[in-house]
Length: 148
Image (cartoon, rainbow, N blue to C red; front, side, top):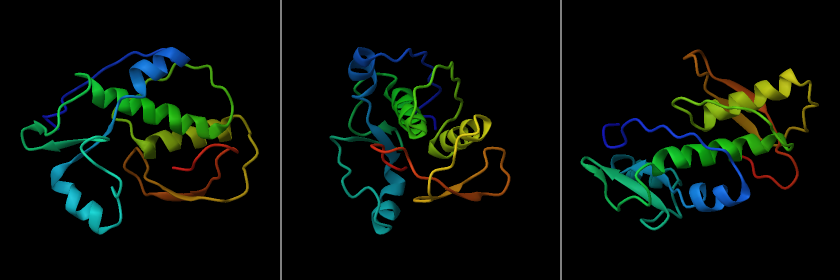
């Protein structure tokens, strides 16, 4: 979207950098989608304090940092990778990322490492990043982690 533009950020997570640089980044959405989201029971707790709302000319409520959008995408990626329930030592490059693509990565890592599948607790519809057909996978997060 032109109001978002292209944002790039290299980030090495530490407890301090997470708290200071990523945690303040809010989720974001488009004003044009808000009515449909609310109609479908989504964005119920959303407000101009905890989300960036993007109108035709850009953010309606300002940004906490000029690259808040990419910071939130990294925050989402780290949260989704936490579903593995184990530390990860890796260099990750994401382009046009989102929860569906992040979950594909989590499931691919799980399969590659031969990790035992946890009992089915969450049915997830995964849209293929390649544009192929979506598939459903049963996935339960590690204890102490929330499902996406």
